[in-house]
Amino acid sequence: MKKNTQTLIEHALAARKKAYAPYSKYKVGAALLTATGEIYEGCNVENAAYGLCMCAERTAVFKAVSEGVREFSAIAVATENGGSPCGSCRQVLREFAPNLTVIITDVAGNFRETTLAQLLPDSFGPEHLPETSE
Ligand code: THU
Image: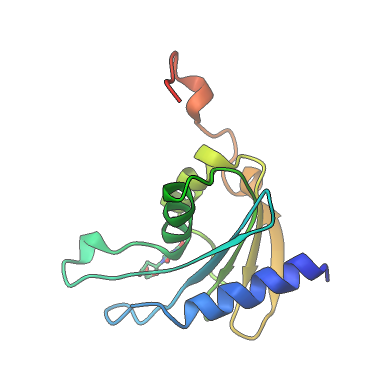
């Protein structure tokens, strides 16, 4: 296993412990590796108004982007049973990192590695819009 992979998995598992998931009880942690080697962690944050629940992956992306960081090379996602990132998170990740490596792990550290392109084929992105300002 690559050192980066192991480190990212450890961060995702640590982030998962901070999840606020009193309704689903399904804790998720994410660790997003930037192009310059920094790691942004995220966890799912639920709400009594269920529709406002936020996923771990998007928490990590929004943390990074709001700090001015937009280039990413990999993300690790940790759940109890190795669940895969939801469609909304795939689309949000795709905005910034169409070539992202995605590592999906369970709590025991059993993991698999895939890519965002595999998880979200033939995807829509900024380049499909006629004009973008940023
Ligand atoms: N969840 C994530 O954090 N990431 C995903 O990709 C799938 C779902 C969260 C949302 C909610 O808090 C809980 O898992 C159950 O759906």
